[in-house]
Length: 219
Picture 1 (tube, rainbow, N blue to C red):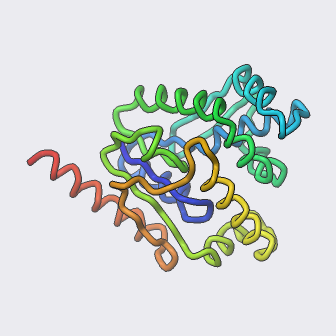
Picture 2: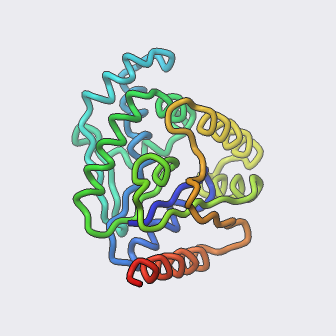
């Protein structure tokens, strides 16, 4: 198993999916799960300042997470939400929903169930190496300069770079300071600065790290 953590815009999703495809492994985007719950919370019109209601919604919804890197998908109560969960409303609210401790416990348990059912898997998120799967064969923490992260995200979402930079800074602050499972690098994770690296180069670097780690375990 490979755990890929890091902030928004660091390249987690693109790198993880491509790596999983090259390794003929499954792929899990844990961030999509938090986004899906957030979408359900917004659909219900719940107050984002009401953690008990948020937790109840998270408990009641049925999440279906596809793990094929060529065609990952996520559904809420059978409804495909791959597009809606990437919208501005969910993006603005997801850090708040993801900070609710009971939501995190619920989704971490679900993530571990998915991981346990796969022989080979690449899992991306913000707390994979520290909380979800601290026993991962390889832990990688991707970073990038704030300006480059904003450029990537604004290009992807067709948004204003300055507004995107401000939103990323806000999410970084919330994700890193939350009480439950904050965003941070695992002590034994390898940090890769992707600022000047293309996707193929990052994937190759992670594959080399994995090969070296597997080789160490065989000795």
